[in-house]
Length: 310
Image (cartoon, rainbow, N blue to C red; front, side):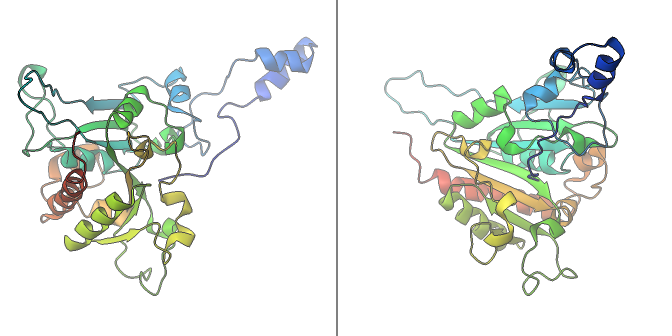
């Protein structure tokens, strides 16, 4: 989900006002030297302005409140007589875990891995479950509740690993979550009492968007192109258009983004509500997870087929 920009700081300056009054010191000087005093609030609606600021919050500990997982596959060319392939696509879930539920599990599936089994024997990476794999990055909220407070708007993402993956690939597919009511699609085509499981396809790569819409629809799901004039008037915050959105920070300067409604994401799991439930029941949705995963993988393959390594 792409949130509106917030200009207010996460930390209140009231402490600085109180300190200045008590000390009789000039207010400006006290404000300049003030140290943020408010503890992390899981109910806050004010976003961190960047991943850097989130990581610097002393109230948050990586591995406790949030976590990151990533994989860059080992590819190499050591033979002058042969031409080897190069990794062209990376899969991102910038708001995974409990922030936008289901996006990290789906990202792992599209990347070719079992969402519930990434660690094998002796803590070595578990093998892929599909023959073709993609590099991936996940930022995941690990709180029991209030994970929305860990959301950083995509265009403000400055995580070094996420950005390095994006900039070293031709394509990025970034997965996000939204609600059906937020996207405000025409009720004539998408009545509020009808099928609310919808994928909004964005990003600046029109060929990638077209492939995703086609494959997702062919797999039996609803999908709309955020740039289609029928829908674009209400999808400005969900179209992945910003040039600093990691999906567009590729070698080509464009990529793709999926905004998936809660109803769609929930339908991909036997147990959607908990992290452990999603990890263990992705293959208990009557084939819907696999169908959506494979539709995205076919779209990636379609786009990559037009991108030879020169």
